[in-house]
Length: 164
Image 1 (cartoon, rainbow, N blue to C red):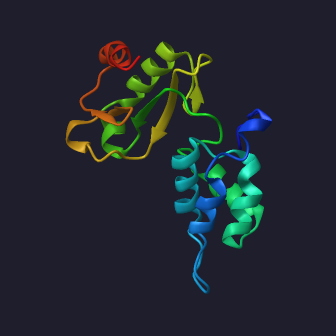
Image 2 (cartoon, rainbow, N blue to C red; image 1 turned 90 degrees about the vertical axis):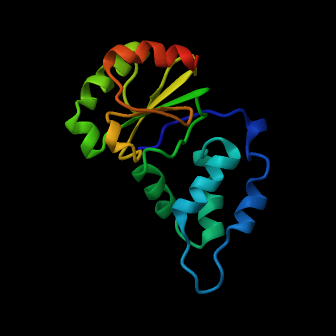
Image 3 (cartoon, helix red, strand yellow; image 1 turned 135 degrees about the vertical axis):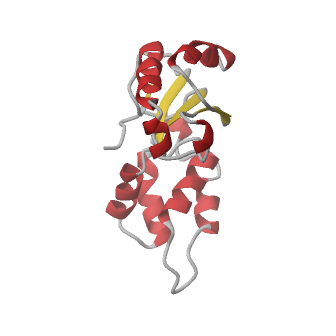
């Protein structure tokens, strides 16, 4: 389900969205890569405003339902403003085998949110990822792109303090 976010009218459409969608139009006969397009929109605009779905669909020659379906299927795609800090916890097989559930529980407790949510003050977003490629030193957590391995619940407070 898409998060409902209210943006001030003056911020929509985001600067550069039209130009980006024009550049990302598929060539005649080419199938659109909606995931690539949505990542590009997110990178350019910070998130994917649900009000942009019609423009994205039109630019790619697909239905709005197609775009909304991809957006809702991938939890890593943000439909609301991003937090200042993104905390990603790996839920891959190796991390699961090494008790990442304990790390998730501690992150949820420390941040006061569940996976896929952002703290009320907009400081942290907590996301699950399927694999960060750090299996040899699992469980792993990535904060603002910095990867940490062999993370224990006791490490969480210090890791969050480093990034606040």
